[in-house]
Image 1 (cartoon, rainbow, N blue to C red):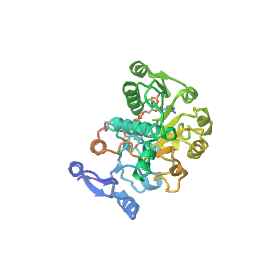
Image 2: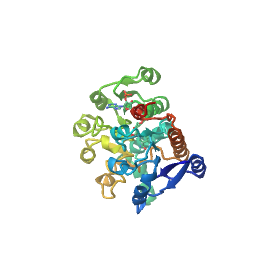
Image 3: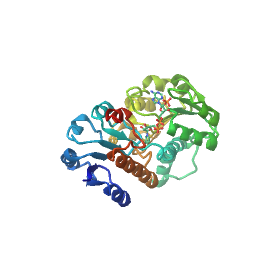
Image 4: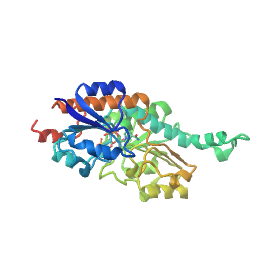
Length: 328
Ligand code: NAP
């Protein structure tokens, strides 16, 4: 008999068909409205879950006594309680690598968008307010040749360094738990303490996971260490920053500008002070949101889930402890 999978993210017809060859599917396309109630109703039968952007806490997962595997359509796994999953030997998988380049592209879009004031000035044109040539009040700042500071030199950090070094001639400085000699050699990059990076970088880019150690890693003290001309870019998770401190630094001019794809609470409230600041470019968590990459992520998640439900170790297993707990 086929196992039962609950989807809380839509799949393309081809991927749905592929998953359907291995499992019975209950699909909940929208978590709004009665979606969450429908998910709760489906959980008692679920052997597998596939989706993203939903906090799967103990209260929800306690409703799923048969659950064997969760396939997240994301690389970040901050929506999952790993200790809980380990305790119940539920395998969690994610979708690294396939989204790396696209997310780095988003990072660079925010770097260029903020430095060259693309959104602000394009809005001026659209509003019919381009009545004479721009002057110093509208000038942006250069990107090429400026120092790129990367906090979290992992897959996405490296892809950002590649763009900065080879594409824009930017000196690269980074902070991560460990120095990366291969990165240093490839991009002529330099590992530094957080404080050193904040003091030197023209662009401070967040590309690390949200964990207990990184939550609110950047706050008032850190903004005070940055250059007044610095631009802050966050493509990691909103909660790695103290958002109130970020707003204060932007309002006071202590920080020049910010490009933000992620926020403390998403969707960002329409009355957020961030949206009243011309020196902010805000995007709706689109790091990996291209047609090609979202399909590749979904394919990766489907493959992970099929493997896990067949009793095999999925390629992108996040919690090896759960695998070990199954006596494998
Ligand atoms: P990754 O390859 O695991 O890289 C993470 C990096 O963060 C590693 O270099 C790691 O350092 C560093 N790090 C972890 N904890 C740290 C700490 N306490 N202090 C300093 N550095 C720390 O992950 P990735 O694939 O690049 O993805 C990174 C994150 O980006 C994801 O977790 C996700 O939250 C976010 N993301 C966002 C979007 C979006 O839509 N905006 C899309 C994709 C990913 P070491 O190597 O030295 O351990």
